[in-house]
Image (tube, rainbow, N blue to C red):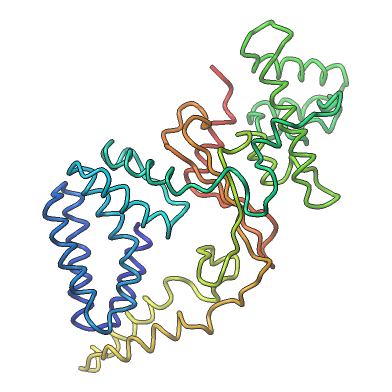
Length: 366
């Protein structure tokens, strides 16, 4: 929500006194929600709606729709208005399908309403391409015989690299004989055997089956195994998602500026406006709202956006709580892969929830 507040602040700076009032009301709403003043926050949001409904504030209303729906949902849930809260959260999720709610920041009532709303708007367990879901495909997958990698000098370059500890990698690098490597691999899997000493190591067989599936389904070129791609790595560690799908990335929807959707930094317009305002103040004058708007447009207008491409899309794998590793506190984690010209194919977006979940999956079972 911090990024959203920053974008809103920049947008509002160009719209004069009315915009300033809207910004003040928005900040007041956030403070009241944080202070758990649910009724007061609802009244402030009503005033904010009225202010944003004034002529000329069309762009403000659009920007406010998502965050206000979220904050209304939080307030309504805590006031016991469960159905209204779910409806508000559905409005928010429709615009932010990959958003999640941190259970450490919000009440159980709010989190429950949010998850109920997510479930209500969740897409079917089938990707938009019409192909079978990953879960069903994995259930039907019949791996070839002898799917495990041989313990030769290249063994650690395979999918086991995703679960090897730093010390294990150092130890492996120092091995020179085939016998030592075989012994290392045996001890490696036994250290992860949920039933120590049992020949039926379910961890090993499960890992090798997921790696074989990834090799069969996630190949992107002839030089790299499917289990070594970003999607392969996630699948090897987490298995099939609860559900997943793809959607095209259109201009303005991609927040990864380094990938080329914008030719300038997201901070550029803020810095430029600040510098220009300081220069005007030093000269004894003040920038008009029109001048500020023109400067913002210079940094955020159509000329700064990359051309839209039909080949740009994101694939999202949704993992619900029951599929997450032990110790992960999220109710759902959305793993996003971006394919975009000049950026790459199915590149994992390494946000905090995703990285936390993957790290938890790498740890040995206690």
